[in-house]
Amino acid sequence: MNTTVYLIRHGDIECADRIPGRMTGMHLSDHGKKQARNLIEFFKDRDLDAIYSSPMDRAVETASVLAEEKKLQIQICDAFNEIDFGDWTNKRFSELESDFGWKQFHFFRNGTVIPDGELMIEVQSRMISQLQLLKETHEGQSFAVFSHNDPIKSVIAFYSGISLDLFLRITIDTGSVSVLQFDNESCEISKINIIGDFQAYWERA
Image (tube, one colour):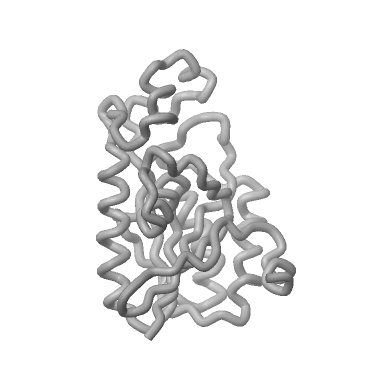
């Protein structure tokens, strides 16, 4: 029996010029709210048995629109949280341009230690472990996971069999959907980074 997992990145936020990390109070912008509403069209004719979300406001706000439409409760799951950016949290990207560790983070993602933060391999481990548990819980069903850019990339990298050092080649836009199909033996990544006019996309596919 196939189990379908929809990995959804939260919508656009108001302060996109800095690293939000695990800061509270980072809410969706008007564009982000529109992206959240777009999900209703995508899931209009698709069954959904459960919705899980990172505890971050921006993820929960994105999930809440679909949860209301599908009449499902949002189940908060810490394993799907944003990467802990430690001392880089709330720093403007422009402030980090001369930071050697920040530069290294973009080329050696697998081994770079964020000051007082989380290793990328730790992010991948918690994401995959939780997905494997939920896959068993929802065998033969479909569920959505609302998370963040790097955590979703780490999942795609894992099931693609590529190194975390190469996962920046993957694009996961705000408000996008990526789709995993599990059977008893394997995982197929059927769609990555679907955005915009979902209905038109699927009609062309």
